Image (cartoon, rainbow, N blue to C red; front, side):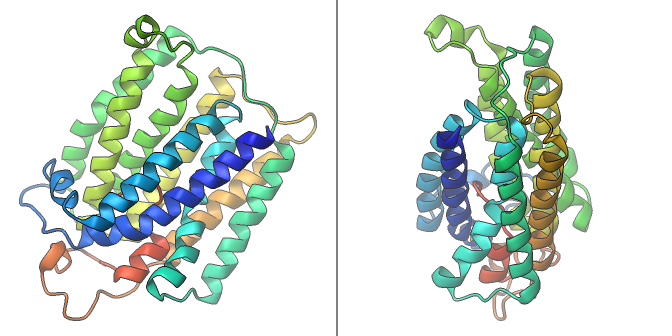
Length: 307
């Protein structure tokens, strides 16, 4: 269990630092035309060195996340990954010269306190395998996300950013649940398990939706939607279908810790945005984005793990 907690925190560190580079790369990439979701956007951001560096950190963070998900309840890992926002906020300071306000430091402290409570109250990973209905269900959700994202991209203003962020969070949540539903690693087991396809499709859709949300909408609004999507649903699935539990008598402590960690993450998203950069013009879609943040501001509220 100690290994799982170390991996969860290390994963958040990797994802949070990656966000510092990825949010800037997404904002500096010319926007396409049409709806808020552009599949070619991922190809364009791959020309940015900051994005590539972020991807390397993402890869390491994902491997650490896999270890954590195989040893800890999903609700604990989800809260730790929401804490990516705290890592991003702190990392933006030395890397980009941004300064956190008092309210943001308070939010970081709340996140850390919530995670400490969760660490004390978390039980072992549940050992239920999850039935065929759950495996098919996560695959259906993963397949539906690109179409839902295309519709969300047509919404105006903040509604678009929130919907794209929520869709990205659901995609990352699909990954969290799907990892627990993979119970065999032989080629035959992987090819016949719907959870494997859900993991691949859900992860890809989440990257696309969040990159679009970061480039074309309010960073803070998109981040808040992502945090809710990737924490609440997977945590409920872990408790209801996969047997995740707390230590005896410590369920209220776990609930309080989870709530504090998520609330602190949402507060960081709320306080992280600032006015757009001067002289940025229309490059990177910033002139059209509602509430577009400057580099450091976008990063202090920007999502972790993801572009």
